Length: 364
Image (cartoon, rainbow, N blue to C red; front, side, top):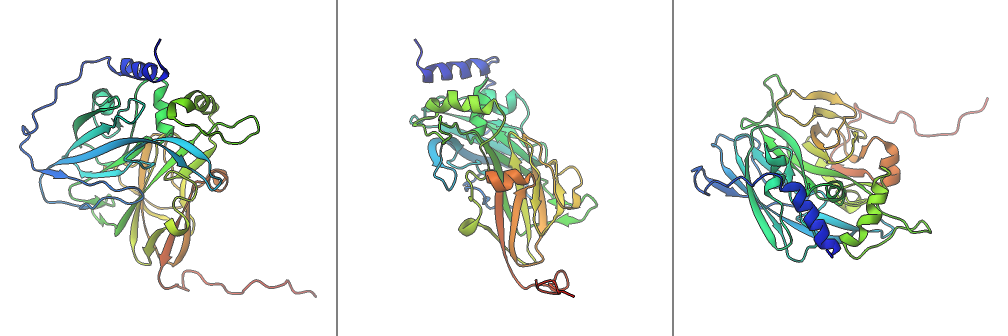
């Protein structure tokens, strides 16, 4: 009889091996320069040029799958996460239109599950999922051409019921494909940013025991049946940014200065979201995440469709703490989908001032 692990691996492999793998081209047949990129954990993004005069390159990335138990809230709730490079979301990868993206997906022998990666930015073979299915102890390398600009989700898609489970267990991230000439407002004016942060929104489904307490498990496979039962009710127990409640608040708040323009890349691999910067706006917003479309301007709240990413820039005009939330405020306040920007600089009374401080209402 198959063990649970073997059964899961066999089901995943059978679901994806419907078409024969496409032979890879020789490593040097493109005759293009190569650039190896060291990825960094979100919310930070690896160094990159916003515009380039150089020709296309082969951009090399490595994603190592890590299955691990993590704490996801201030109550100490544990969660059996499956991740790319150990973070939820996985790292943001930045390239330019026309570049070739070469990704080595590593599944260490210490893991228990098969995994792969589906790039929404790629063309063919289930976004690469058919060509990257790796069992524990295996690795595979996929190369695809960045033909469309914008921000795009990537996620694990090992087949059948494993797909939603792996996605909500943390296996999702994003790719940003910049136009070679850089971003614009759609009317020929360049749009530049001083810094960029990547916020990955994650819905989680943690089972409870008969007393209503969150349950803890020793492995992903052990949690599977209970987790799927919660998932099928479509009511998340947590909705968080970057892997846990408070991941981007307090000492981990995102930072900026008055006068700086910040780009925010926001992804949601599974559910719709409505980002809102309290006290600020979206100066330029690519709500659908595609840079070939002109950005909308001056938005108060924008919409991120489930299974997609969006991008927005804002030039901070006042100092202070700005809350960045999903404007389903129940999810923001009760379930955890809140981040903070800590902005330094000089206050501008012309934009806002307190005319009178709170006082008792005078009686006649």
